[in-house]
Amino acid sequence: MIERIRSGGKLTFAQQLKLTVQLSWPAMMAQLSSIMMQYIDAAMVGRLGADDSASVGLVSTSLWLFWGICSAVTMGFSVQVAHSIGAGDHKRARNILRQGITSCLIFSLIVAAVGAAIAYPLPHWLGGNDTVCPKASLYFLVFVLALPLLTMNYLGGGMLRCAGNMKVPGGLNVMMCILDVIFNFFLIFPTRHIEVAGIGFTMPGAGLGVLGAALGTVSAEIVTAASMMWFLCFRQEGMAIAREKGRFRPVREVLRKAMKVSAPMTLEHAVICGAQIAVTVIVAPLGIMAIAANAFAVTAESICYMPGYGIGDAATTLVGQSYGAKRLDLARRFGYITVGLGMFTMTVMGVVLYFCAPWVMELMSPVDEIVSLGVRSLRIEAFAEPMFAASIVAYGVMIGVGDTIVPAAMNFGSIWLVRLPLAALLAPSMGLAGVWLAMCIELTFRGAIFLYRLLRGTWLKKGL
Image: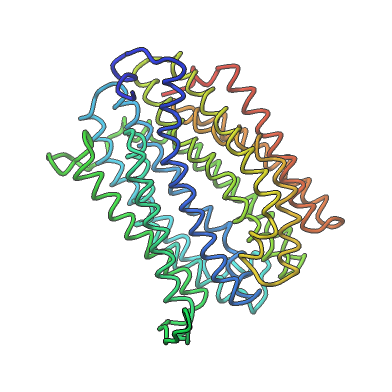
């Protein structure tokens, strides 16, 4: 059915909905598998104690900043590929891919160098104590040094999804989750005696603790990135650049369009993560238990909103290809369908989160105080999931046409003008619950303004 978008064929509402679900399902599974990796890391590190949990939680938002900046840069090239494929110009799509590889590698190397330079002082800037900071610095350093390879994972997955291939990125992300379990199992814990069905044996282990968690996850992502890029460059129909010669040197027009998409996204992600780091600073004075509970609760809540990001990926593909084929009415309809599907899915996930919060937190930490703080936070946040979905998927819709400046400003304004002042106001009296109440209010507000802009339709006039 996706071929009908490019050829101008008619699609009924039922077919549009079916196509949305078909593309969303693998993307949702890919997002969920990445979240399972965070669950695995959190659960395994949580068994090491509150200090190790806090060391990971202290720098987690800073890592999201660096990852997100690199991911946003790849989107500037992926959106152009979606438009080119929608217009039936596969040769141009391959040229954009080559230029994207060069540009993203150079950019990620610069970002990695910046990250390595601040790895040591960063945990101290965030308010960590002498027990937590050394492990936090090491954890952060391992991830930022691997950024160039991780960026290729983002680029490969984004290009495949914009070409309409959701299954390969989804399958490879599931593989990454399995590899993460295996690598972490041997790297985090020391050699130990284990009994299974009454049979005892010695299980080897490196005993690297927090460092092992970082190395295990990075190793899994590197294997996945290599597999993703191999399939994209050698096997993906219409995109296999290995089958022909071409120049990898970026040209001005492609870079200009990539910057139009990526620059607002990169700036927006930077300021949002900056706000999340500011939230970490607000939480830090509440103590190690609050830092660990906040980090675990953020990870736990992500299982609710990652399906929304999966549907947002599908929305970017469907809207982008419709826009490239100059079918604006179809792009608008796909926007409405994907946002509706996202809100329904995340509403269900929010209900599940509310009732399963105690079990989820107990999975991550054996410390009663951390579990109690986390459960209370998650049950507050569950009420924001429907409107959070609206903002996530509507953002994906607008990215599909290349409209990023206004949505970026909306995200920036919402988190800095609503969430942070409320969190600073409520934290002294309500503790961690006040921080999460501020988040709930802000996400509801953000969803409302994104729905308003989606229904107005002005985003269709702001594309590439």
